[in-house]
Image (tube, rainbow, N blue to C red; front, side, top):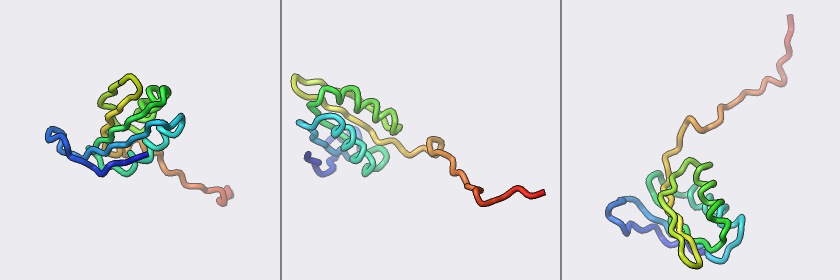
Length: 109
């Protein structure tokens, strides 16, 4: 696995693009390493993921949907696929509410 230093190669984006080479890895590693890489990005940054695992075409879009990030495109080659993902800003609505435990409290009349 190789993670290149963030690049701002496209002036139209204005944000960093991190390249993640996951060629040769099999399920579930491409999805797990993509999730880890997404956690380290700032909102608006992009992650370019290159995979050879045929299941990545299912796993990566599913992961992106679950994290709330945005899949900008998939480029399929003869032997690999490249996913371009934009990191979204964290949403407060997607966080589960905190629950307080009152297990020690008793009901007295």
